Length: 218
Image (tube, rainbow, N blue to C red; front, side, top):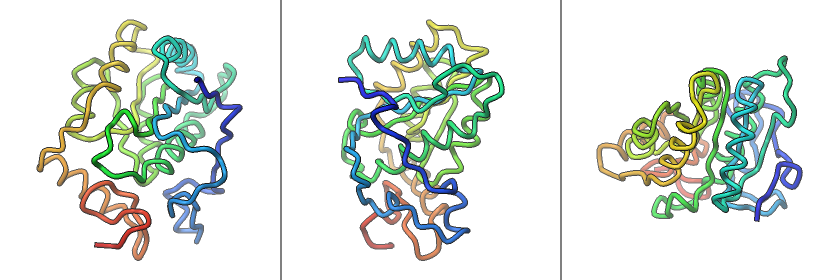
């Protein structure tokens, strides 16, 4: 079954994750609590501004053909004046909120994000402001696989300007099919990121040696 954005409204705090703790906001999903919406841990969340809109529509078609669940969090229409941070935050917050699962769980069962803008750079910068997000841009199959194997990337960004449809399709296929290697050196480095972004006395939502939502602070 395919779930579109209209069936899963974006549940957002008044502030992005990176600013929530500064404003004293404790978003519910960082505590691992359900907001009443059904949770699909293998959902693929899509987001794009005008620069990636046309390619996003193609991605939706491919995912449908591959029988993969996705939710389009916008833009829903082509608007040359829209801004990429809105869509990057929407996708990143969804992925972060639903990523509090054991590391042993298969990648196919984890929530994922795919973002598209003109360069991919803006989406990566914005998405990585959300704790728990490891967004990476990929321009070919090799870089897509590397981002998964080495960095455990849970959000993929693709350039709408510099990526043709055939290459984009190969990138997405490779990224979705590649598991995190879990080699000690890679786990250690991903853990260091999770620990660094942990609010003092708070929960990081990390998936390695750092604290976990609902768990103890190590």
